[in-house]
Length: 154
Image (cartoon, rainbow, N blue to C red; front, side, top):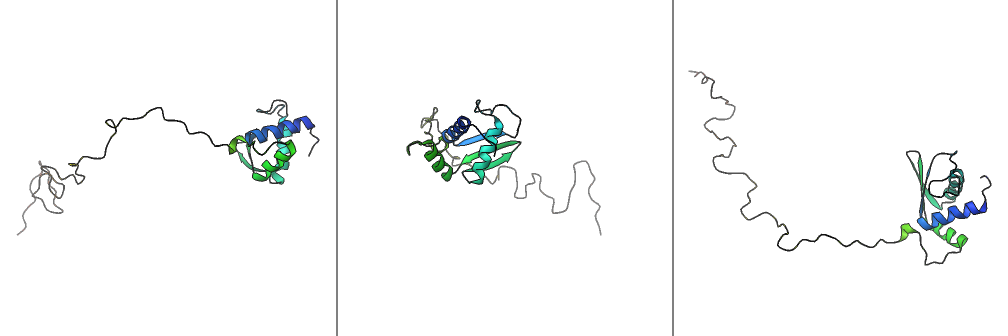
């Protein structure tokens, strides 16, 4: 691991502990990291490679981006290294307050289930059991209006 200035290391550690996650593009020549402007992207990649080997973060690589998420061991390590009290937790560990619904229906406008006369079998009116409207033809017999009747066999 290359030598990384202490202030860069502290900036990365603070950001990682504050957010709980860190994203970095796979670009070793990028001068500044997208979220931490004072640190080069190479410094972030090297420190988090070290964290991954010590199992302080889990790493996912997708579409040329690295995604790191702090583990419980990583939270404990950063808490002792940064001297942060137990009450402070990363943003990914905080429960978000449920948002109150802005739209509520009154009892009159709520939709109810199907009415009592609903018949899903579709047996209506002139339709017979077989589904044919005209009837009179048996199985395998097909005749259109314009065609001549089938010849009789004796």
